[in-house]
Length: 166
Image (cartoon, rainbow, N blue to C red; front, side, top):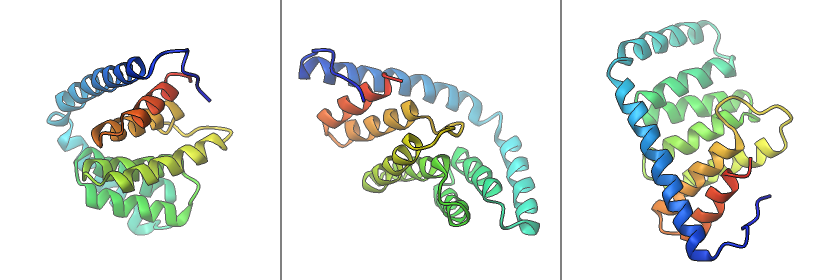
């Protein structure tokens, strides 16, 4: 979808690295500042969803919300299991695929992270109404971040550049 604006490879890679670093730093600071103060709130919300799901195990959206809470609490294996439950009930959820990708990214499993994030991109491109949190720019940003971390600078630059076109 995007275009390179006639920028050279080195310039595109430098822009991608800077964009990932800047956005990542801002996101980490915001997340880290809130992690301690919201711990009890996240625990309360998780318990609430678990109680609800005990009586309503077929609610894919509730599984998705519980998985998002587990991801925020850095319980990556639990989040993965909950995202899989949600997708087993409704396999067309870009937000659940994105959550799986992020959980695998945090577990330092880039191949699985790229697979699920790419699946979310493919589904989102065909979705008339994008789900909150699974926007194409966000998905491309995380793909760029993974490619940067694994040393694939060309793909990192392409993904970050793609994220800027939306």
